[in-house]
Each structure stands twice: as C-alpha cells, then as structure tokens.
Image (cartoon, rainbow, N blue to C red):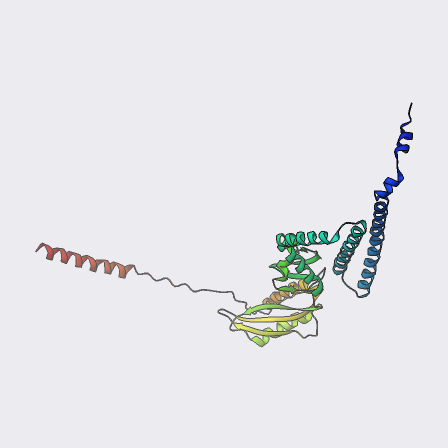
Length: 302
C-alpha cells in the first residue's frame, strides 16, 4: 500500500515553488501586515498626542472628538495605501478609482456634505457650546451635542430637537447664555392721568427689593411710547444669566402687585362702538320711490 503523504512529498518540487514567486508573495504579505499593524499603532499614538495638545489648549470635547476621528481616518488611509503598494497592488489606478467614486458620491450626497461643512464651521467658529441656551432656525433650547451632520438640542420641556447643521449656519444664531448677565425688560402700561415720576419710583423700589437684581449696571425705567389707551413704560433690570427666567417672573409679579397696591391704574385696550339707526330715513326713501312709480304709471296710461 502506497502512503499518500510520501507520494505528496515526493511530488513536491521546492525549486518550482520558488520559481513561482510564492515565497516573495508571502514575504510581501507579511510586510504588508506588519505595515498595517505598525501603522495602526502609530496612528493611535499620534491621535493621543493630538488629543493631549488639544486638552492643553482647553479645546472643547466636541472639537477634540471630531479632530481625533479625522486624524485617525486620514492616517489609516495612508497606512492602507502603503500596505497595498508593498503587497504589489497598483495604487495609482486604485487612487484614480477612489477619486472617481468620491466625486460620484460627493454629487449624490451634496446635502450631507453641506451639513459636514456647516458642522466644521460650528466647531471652529464656536458660536455656542454644549449647555448654552440658544435660538436657532426658529426654535429655542439647550445645546447638547454638535455632530458631523446634525446638532442635538433639548427644549425647556425636555423635548429632543435634531437640526441639520446647514439649517443652523444659514440662519441667525442667538446665544442667550453667552454673557454672564442679561437685561430683563418688564413692560408696564399706565393710564394717561398717572404721574410718570411716581410710577417710576414704584418700579425702582420693586427692582431694588429683589436681591437677584444687580446694582451695576443700574436699573432704570424709560418711557417706550404713548399708546392708544396707555402710556407704556419699561422697567430694565440686569440679572445674572443663570437666574434670569426666575427673576424676570418675580419682577413681573411684584410690579403688578405694587402698582395695584399704590392705586395706579393699568388700562387695557378699549374701543367705543357707536350704533346708528336709519329705519326712519329708509322708510321715507321707500315712500318717495313709491310715489314716483305711481306717477310714472299714470302718465303711461294717459
């Protein structure tokens, strides 16, 4: 009985295998794998160094995460191309194919690329950061996260809003918490017979009694305009941003209570409606018309 392993060993010709270049291919494959492993390790090291540099620059987490991903992706593309070239794959034609595919994908995903560019603008220009209260694209809420394609916000009712980045950068952005203090404007309408200086004293006492109202900048009261049924004043008080909403509500309530206690009238819009009755005159017109018709009929019969 013939041993199959002995037959296989006898049929194996090392010189034919070497002449086929398999040893060279195996070496190239091992070198390509080594390039991938070493390149991946170096890419991670470079990303960590970049992240530490951004930390020393006190960059935000949003910017740091985006830069980390972008740097790692770029480095790995270079590593993969180097590994393929070492293995003998013609990278020139591969790059041309990737460029054509990238152009086609870019045309098909132009809206998505617009969102990416807008996301980069938001990260670099930093009109707001996570935790800021903003008004953008007709909505108001607190920014939670800026992503590559979208920005996530939370409304004051704890609702999630996801906005495309291109919708944000093409509209006006109002950052409500960018400054440490804000001014609260409380509108007050008083009657024409009231003394403005007396009302001003009452409003200033209301603001002074609230401990959350800042002394500097000073609180003031201005006359906004003279309306159809009232003189409109505005109490302008400066408040720390974190206490703005609550303090403005307290001021509005205290203003109403203080003006009521002081006997100062706060009129509301009124309209006078006058009704005229034309029944008698209309009846007279009808009688005159009847006489004219009768006379015309008599003349026609004659």
